[in-house]
Amino acid sequence: MTAIELITKDDLRQFKSELLSEIKAIMHPHQGGTSKQWLKSAEVRKLLNISPGTLQNLRINGTLHFTKIGGMMYYKLEDITTLLEGVSQ
Image 1 (spheres, helix red, strand yellow):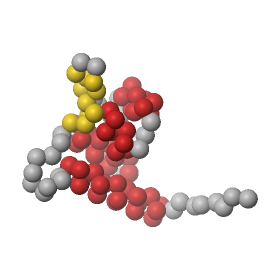
Image 2 (cartoon, one colour):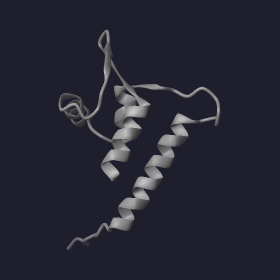
Image 3 (cartoon, one colour):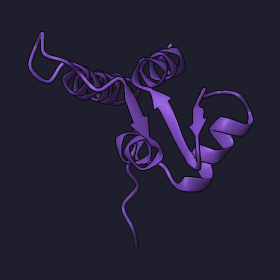
């Protein structure tokens, strides 16, 4: 028999807070130093803990804007933060 774990709204709020803190730390690693404004697909997947297919769906349905240069996709860190803040409301 497996135990059932319940996730409460408070758990989700705490997760949101921790995730946003981590993203802010990435955006401002040295508090005032230059931060990375553009992320590659692999970095976005790692940051959001999503699969390549999920990232592709976010691009296709227009949820996450991107810029394609050559064969590489780049995403603005600001857009990712805005997406996460919009999801949490």
